[in-house]
Amino acid sequence: MNTITIAIDGFSSTGKSTLAKQLAKHLGYVYVDTGAMYRAITLFSMQMGYISNDFFDKETLINSLPNIKLHFEFNPDLGFAEMYLNDVNVEKEIRTIEVSSFVSKIAEVSEVRSKLVEQQQEMGKGKGIVMDGRDIGTVVFPNAELKIFMTASPETRAQRRFDELQGKGDLVTYEEVLKNVQERDYIDTHRDDSPLVKADDAIEIDNSYLTREEQFTAVLELAEEIINN
Image 1: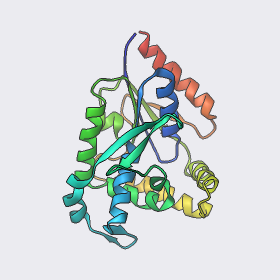
Image 2: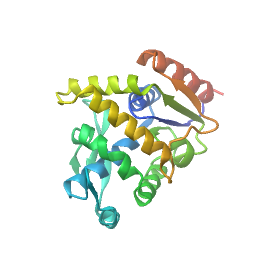
Image 3: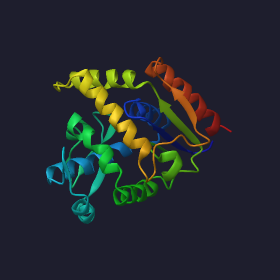
Image 4: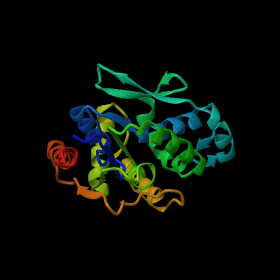
């Protein structure tokens, strides 16, 4: 039986993290949410006043990178690892629409990407890992045995994100969420450093009309085929 690396890339709000968590739990693999890492640096930038709607002090953020400590801690009650920023649990704070509105701009910064890619590659040295993000199959783990690229229409993704935020009690409108999804899509696919693209050997899954269970079953079959051969 092989131990493999599973790379899951795709657009925002396609359910990458949900799928990755399901696979990691079923296979007994380590799960790493790279989006949480970018979100944590975004939250740090907001807290320090480095970024706002009309301002981004990129140089000060770059100079502050050595002072940003990120790590995951497994929460047995939740069944997954939570994000810690400088030893503070920020799992809830990084999931807001405010953080979402800035995260793609932070992820455009080459120095930020370089710092996080290095950490992510270190995490995956022993294989037995499921990692999701924007450049996992193309940059972080170009030799991953299984690469999945997830997509769905912007409207479908916005509705999912809107429902999720409303469920948490966030006061947002569907139009606001759709605009955020579309803006992130544009930035993610047009940035100079590691833009969001489907790896040549990735399997594309459009989950606009798939349930979470159907999606999980389809990808698990693909994984088990590789693991057992």
